Image (cartoon, rainbow, N blue to C red; front, side, top):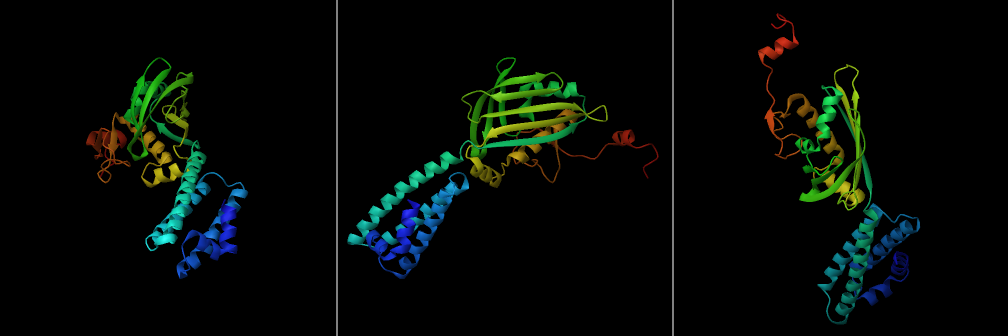
Length: 295
């Protein structure tokens, strides 16, 4: 379709203008060949195999431009020309619907893998035990509203997605070594299919634990969903980094600590029990520095 429209608009622009009812105005004489060139670009991309992702959405953008131009033309046409324009507009609306459906279908199902790590000044058994109580996870994971344990290896998750949407899924633990790692996956029917693993490795200092998280999940709208999420402050990589930062604070201090300059942390959400950062007390300073070191 793109190839045929493009060739017609470039080879016989006058006939296209007459059949569509746009007339022979100076604007239409410029616009028809330009639209034809755009259609040929789309045709070349499709023939080259670019039928998914952002490329599919360029056709939708082109359709929107066509509908806008047709709307302007309709406002200034009457009689037989207006009838022809209405017919063309109806055809373009049908094409737009097909293009939108194709774009949505080809951009859904994209997967994203996230990794993050932090070091917690607690021994691996303690860190593992806290994480293994899955209902603890909403205490530091910003997107989680609730994790309800349904059996020893299964649980029900409720999360907030971008644009104030709520998604739910059931998950099961598929691999577990106490004190070392936990691996899980969502069960069939999940709103957002996902899987992941967290490892608890003794740190070189012999006291702390290196926590490494790897998560894979499907974005609601592939690459487009990722771009929109980042634009609205829901960038998944940053989310996971922030979650582990809060996890470290919860494990080491029992609460999420914030600074006065960022009263609600990196995410403007109020669900975390936070307190302002405060100077160390004299007793805490004495534990860090030898007596007499301070002037």
